[in-house]
Image (tube, rainbow, N blue to C red; front, top):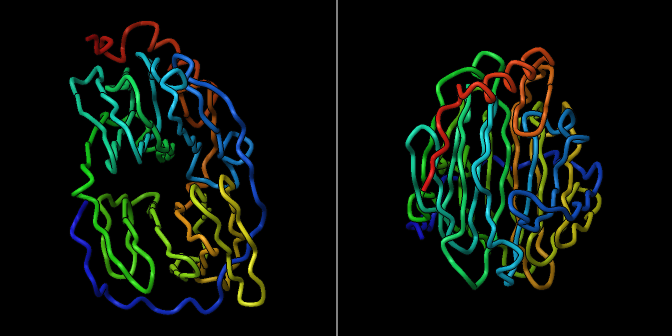
Length: 302
């Protein structure tokens, strides 16, 4: 793990915290070669949570639930952010990138104009757990060059404050800059570990869309007048408001571990067909044609 600063810079207090607009229970599904997962953020929420397109949570001690992994498949027009809590996954892509994603690490892949990649387990037993978040690209960048970055656990900044340990994957929290910064969508991606009863607050620009996903324990979202409980394996969509400047969270009696994700909406049309996300149907048809014509490069192979 990374070195944890004991005294992060003081962040301005959240004076008008956001409320919970709704709670979302993910849908059990499978993807790749039969990998069992929960789709928490799906297409019906894409406009509401722009610039985020999808959030999958996966976690199992049964190798049969994940051993097939995600063989060669294409992407165009967005970024994938895979955060591994436990387990080992090997990435290969048609641009020649290769990396091993393991406990506490992040893989940030920009599909741009097109990539074929695979993500396959490098373990035959034990726990495999993590998340994959899809982050949209602005229209001007959708046909840009693909990119790939492996971020080891030790490279993810952390800080501790009043019963909370926070990993800053993207954005900035309490003066601590995250491992990734993106100008167009300004993503904030925090993994928060809260002790029983501990509180944590985070400033969020009023115009950004935001949500919390609880993957251990339970926490409450404090609106200033009431505490809305968010149980395990639930996503709380945080209400927008021109006068709202952030979020206040409080862990339950058993503590909590949760993701806090926010970003600046692109406010552009979204056209999606499976692993292709563009702005128009015509661009989707072109993506399919380009893939079939081999313009995404050759599959990564073994």
